[in-house]
Length: 57
Image 1: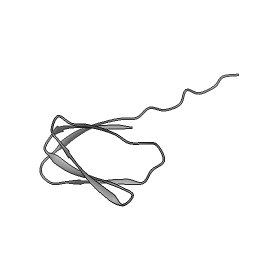
Image 2: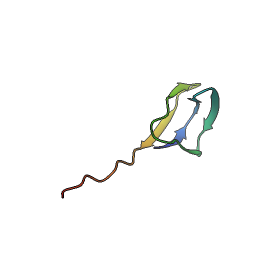
Image 3: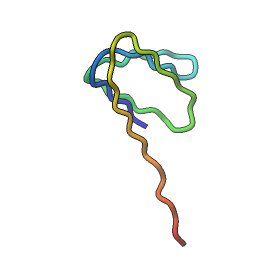
Image 4: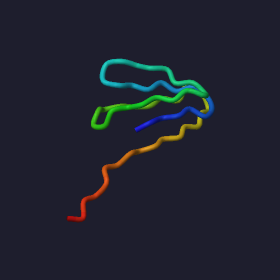
């Protein structure tokens, strides 16, 4: 999953760490990890999920 901050600032909580994500920055998050978000001001984020392709055989 990727998070792109389009406007504002958010805290991204990953396990025991907190990362600051500001406008113009992109963060890549590994699948299956607990995470949380806290907007520090009015913010807009774009979240992109990459899902595995389904098998048809």
